[in-house]
Length: 348
Figure 1 (cartoon, helix red, strand yellow):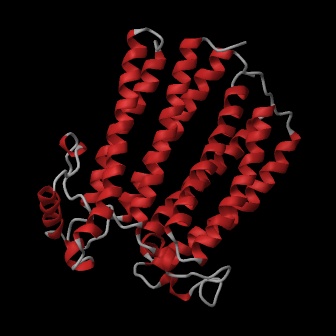
Figure 2 (cartoon, one colour; figure 1 turned 180 degrees about the vertical axis):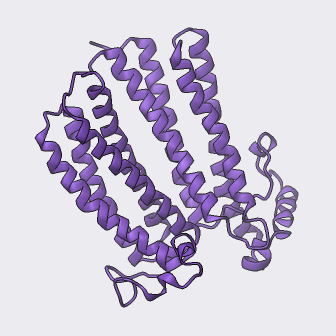
C-alpha cells in the first residue's frame, strides 16, 4: 500500500529535520575541534542572525572577544583574520540552530492548519520543537561555562549538549518511522522477540554511555594524551588513572581514566554487537530488522577503525568529525533496530 501524499510530506519534512540536526552536530564537532566555540561571547537569539558586515563591526566584535579569558590566556596576539576564522564556525553553528527552528515551525503550523497533523501526532511533533528550544539554551549554558576564569567549556555541559542533540535527532527519526509505517500498515507481527528487543535496548544504552565518554574525552582534550594503540603509552592500563582524590572523581575528570574508559567501552561494544548479530539469527526477522542489524555490525567496525586512526593521528579535525558522525550513524542503526523490534513485538 502506498503512502498518502499528505503523510509523505510529513515524513519527508521530519527526515529533513533529522538531516539538518545531524548537520548541526557535524558543524558543532568542527567548532569544537577548531576551538571556535568561545568566539561569540554574547547570546543574541534574534539579532545574532546577522554577522558583522563592516570592518568597524568586525573590530568591535574582536575587541569584545579580547575582554574574555580565552583571548587573554590562549589567543593573545591573534590577528583579526584568525578571529574571523573561529567566528565563522561558531556563527554557522548558531545560524543552523535558528534555521532548523524555522524549518520545523513553519511546516508544523502548515500541517496543523491543513489538519494533516492531528490528534497525538501534533503533541509528538511539538515535543521535538520544545526540545529544540531547550537545546538552544543548553548551547549557551555550555558556552557560558568557558567565559569565566578558565577558558574551556565544562565537559559535563558539552556532553549534555551533544546528548540532547542526539536525543532530538533520534526522537524525530522515531516519529518519522512511526508515521511512515503506521500509514502504510506494514507492521507485521514478530513473536517471541522480547529477549532480542531487550538486548537491543541494552546495546543502545551502552552506545549512549560511550558517546557520553566520547564527549568527556573531547571536553577535557583527553584524546591528545595517549596517541598510541593498542597500548596507552607503554601499558594497557596507564598508571595515572587513579591520580585524583577522591577515587570516584577519576571516572569523570581524570584525562587518563576517561580515555581508558572510552577505549574499553569500544572493546566491549565490538564483540557484543557481533554476538547480537549472530544471536538475532535465531529469530524470524523481516528485511528491515535483518538489514539494520547487519548495518549496525558494519558501523561498529568502521567506527572502531576510525577511532584508532583518530587517536594515532592526534585528533585531526577531519578524523575527529568523522568519528563523531560515526557515532551518530551507529546510534541511528541501533534506534532503527529498536523501532523494528518494538513496533512489531508490541502487536503480538
